[in-house]
Amino acid sequence: MPEKISLKLDTLPVELIYRILDHLDALVILCSLQNINTRMNAIITSYQPFQAFATLDVGQRRLSYERFDWANIIRYNTTLTTMIFCKNNLDDRAIANLVRGLEHNSTLISFDLSYNRIKTAGARDIATVLKYNQTLETLNLSQNKIGIAGAISLAIVLKHNTTLTKLDIKSNSCGDEGEQLVTDALQRTT
Image (tube, rainbow, N blue to C red; front, side):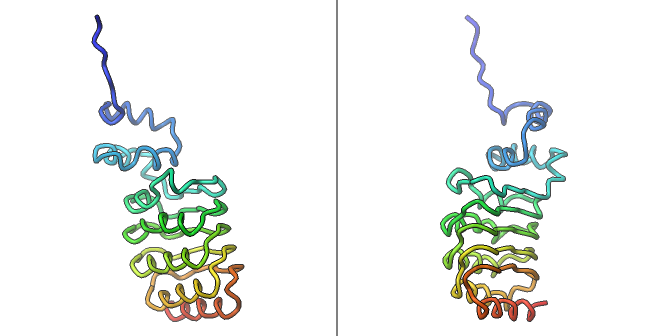
């Protein structure tokens, strides 16, 4: 009787894994294969097409924050400079999960969270992360509902964050006062 052989992806030869990766898109690689173990991370980061992978555009994909560990994807990725999560119906709970990874990310420069359902709590989570993140230069929060309290939270942090130079908060129910607070805070840091 022949012996049954069980193969796992992370035990295959590197060249074979590269061939498998050739047939997957970047989102699948990021969400399904990255952070499995140290060997897979090394293989993925040495995979030539992935080294040039700078932009992740998952706008309008109806993403579930429960399905993917976005915090770890953002935290440990060293190639992404731009992430686009617009129009995904993300709420404050999803934003809390998503932005945890920004605290320690050292490559992300531009982040688009426009046209979601971010309210005051989500804006506060984003503001907390901006205390620590030293690379993010552009953040788009337009067309959400952060309100005046969310704008105040962002303005307070922006007085001390010197890397964020562009923040879009138009159409956020924060009024002229909230927009002016954020504008003044950004002008002090640039």
